Amino acid sequence: MNKSGPIIFIEDDVDDQEIISHVFKELNLKNEIHFFGDGESALHYLTETEIEPFIIFSDINMPKLSGMELRKKVHENEDLRLKSIPYLFFSTLAEQRDVIDAYSKSIQGFFVKPASYSELKDTIHSIVDYWQRCVSPNYIK
Image 1 (cartoon, rainbow, N blue to C red):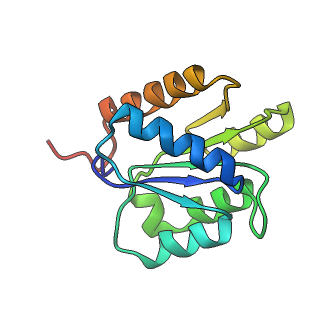
Image 2: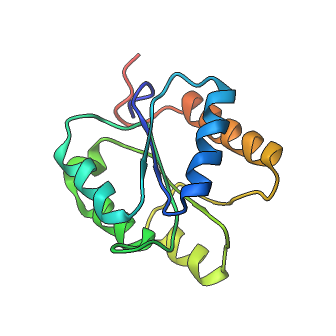
């Protein structure tokens, strides 16, 4: 896990992208944030770049390639799997079947987007802080 790498946010709602961008600025995180409006463009970035992201936040319902389909492709790609990139779902809804399906695909977390800005900020801060403290298989001290 590359703790200084960019944070990938796959979110097709432009308003949500803008709000999330403000949250990251207020949290003063050192990681760059890269937004993708669909799973297909995110997959292209992940497979075609040498950059090793820190965390992937993915919506579930997206055009072209859903979050579940993207997770499956990332998990099946040996190069991406070996990078130990935490893959989290960050969605408006959490239907039980989606949560079960997500965890069956080795997801590292499933979060419902909080309704308030302050809760959103607290949630993102907690997630990033947790993964900053976490040790991964490719951890080098």
